[in-house]
Image (cartoon, rainbow, N blue to C red; front, side, top):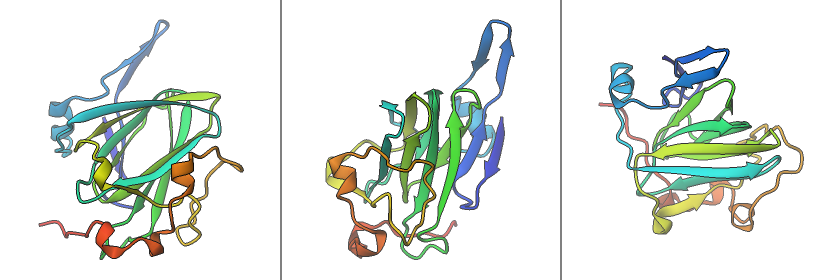
Length: 187
């Protein structure tokens, strides 16, 4: 398994070992022991999946104060996945990183608590899977508009299909400060 830091050091690209032959391939999508050996000590409490068509954009979602870390991957198809640092006081506040995840490249992205998350579908359809470090909490959910010009995400779709809820989110600068997570330096 290969683990690579992104330009946002807490957001990690994880490439599990895939074993293939003429029949197809096999990979371990998660092993607590293997991830801990790689320095990734996280406890997951909920698994989710979503199925979407080409051009669908979901996000940018977050929870606070019950922030969720997410280990995301694509089981079928291809997406462009994005994490945005929304932690007040962070040296990378408002910065984003994106990665193409697909069933063929087997990449995973770890998005820690305190980051907004979203993705858009590049293939005809995509089956997206993610593990969460905390439970979904409707009272704590929030979002940032996917097209926030201050963040400037280079989404690879021209006219994304977005839910009414996601389209109604505001810019990061307009979210009340008490609704955003705080940056805590590593001890």
